[in-house]
Length: 200
Image 1: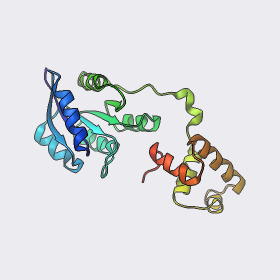
Image 2 (image 1 turned 90 degrees about the vertical axis):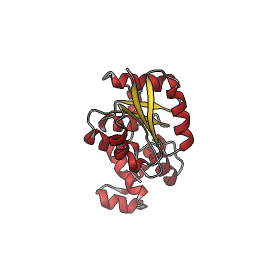
Image 3 (image 1 turned 45 degrees about the horizontal axis):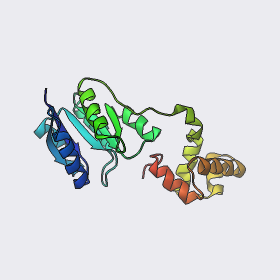
């Protein structure tokens, strides 16, 4: 059985490399490569792929958000998310968006090919998540405060906004910085964005 694949990534070199890798497999056929994700729905209707491979982060689009749209519009289509990030937050978001697989770019080509085939067989493929390290995940309150920091709020403003003491705010910020391996408020925001904890 031939599996028709549509590749979506705003890096043309990445697209060409993926196409070359997949086309070496006798059962995989790349029906289109798309560097402009805004044309995705038209491309799906035109090319009728079995699977789409979506980069998780593109300049103009978010692969997770695109996956949600695709899942709603084309429920039978299989979705494989390709990402440079092996963060639990991203993996969870991909699952919730209805993706069938999540493959990190550091993995071998074989794992991507296997994920595509398994998706077509109705199997879902996601990385093992280190839930035992959940202590390093931000709490709901910490995520809320991180959002306030990103909005450039002072400790006093956060204290007033959330009706908690300034000492409690300072405690939470210290915890956030430790968990995000940051040595400043700006660093915490930057690392929070990298981990997909902030929508910017």
